[in-house]
Length: 109
Image 1 (cartoon, rainbow, N blue to C red):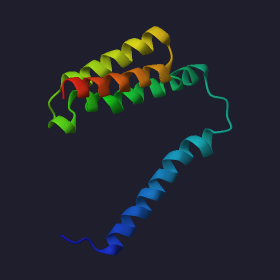
Image 2: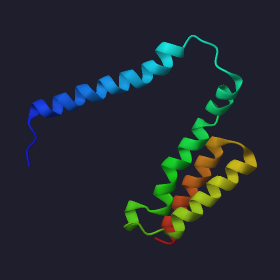
Image 3: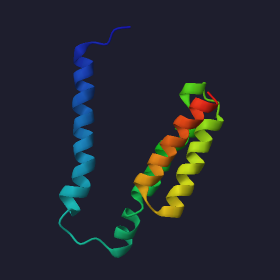
């Protein structure tokens, strides 16, 4: 199956325009205005909401195991969450989680 070059360029340009309009709606139209306190409070939780959304599929349905959960990834997720809650340190949580994953992969396979 071959896609014409003009179709690919049209899709790229349309995606670029769409991305610009989405960002301009926040930065260009309301970027210099004072936001309400409740909006600022909700924006602080954005990374907390995004990171689990990115990581959960990699833990629960990893492509490396064909979509079947394995003890190594589950243990790494539990250690990462536990260390993060206990220490409130993101880097410490990530490093201990990565160490746990590599240790479990070495031990269990």
